[in-house]
Image (cartoon, rainbow over all chains, first blue to last red; front, side):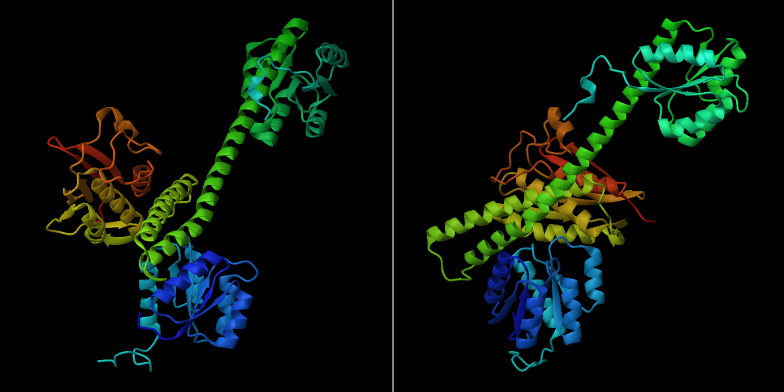
Length: 137
Length: 380
């Protein structure tokens, strides 16, 4: 995957974080931050300013939608991809309306998650960013 | 749990009867007879009073004199029926004359029976017992139906919750195993690889089962929501054929698509219909010998359009045909490559197709194999 930025991964379930982070590493992402809930995620975001946030929808303490709102207040341009399990149409629509870039089914096979993520990266980040391998044609 | 149907002889002691009569002597006689039977009695001397007492006493049965000053028995009965509807206790009219007109009017007003004065105690007791028993049985039946539908809803909720909570951990296990198999954390030894592939296979088939259970629970609970749009049926089928060919190649099986000259447009939930196509193609691959050809044919007759999936498996045993589209309806035929089967796939297909007002059926092909045909209403 053609992405040299950093990713903040937010999910309350440790096995999901383990799985997605291993997948990200496998795809060549080297800078990965993790947070088990929304409020920790906001702290990490302020400190590390990751390029992309992967955000679980259902979390205790502070859920994905609430966290997304707070993130957009911190940085209206931050790129957020929602992580969903059983896609709840309403929640997805709400997230997209709030400025989420995309949503990914975290129960999908790794290659599908990888493809969805790289699609998002292709649309949200300029191809001529400094670390890109090849300049645009 | 208390089983309401286990009482063979019904205990009616303590059932409440409201006796209404403007004649105090009559009232005393009837109350005496009924109290002796173990019933709880409330008395009212007029229609107006009867309505008042009914509201607080909640009787199981009303004995209602027809001729009374003020509102008479028929009017009182009509008011009760209007106020309490289906929940109103049965009303038995008490009349001095057993004239046919009176009796008919009484039934019209909503009465279930009538008694004539002077009372014959045995008759009174027998009739009242019959009506109270009936009423109690109806109540018990309603309770039972309520209980059963609550239990069924709880089962669906439970099934849905279980499946839902199992999905995430299972997909993590599957995903982690797959990544390890792809050497994401380093090259594996042959034994490690074999183990990790076993974990991957087991979690994959569990995930399939859980997803199917969840589908069934969702559909059974009436939560199947279709997000319909106008689509070319060929597009849906073509994509499934393409993706399934990758998996089928492992069995050296090829899936061929036979299109029509025109593309039929249907109004369907693409994801759900895709699930049906995938399922039928997977089944065809699953039950056909290695290296065979599965044919998918698009059909359209101007009213309906759809697709047929033709395999070269053993066909559907005639004596097991009835099980085919039912929940957990596994047949005696076995997959040719050791694939797993939950017995839910075709039941889900049927439910999805029927939700679209379509049909799904199967025919055995005389030479060899089975053909599953799905038809959906066509947009013209």
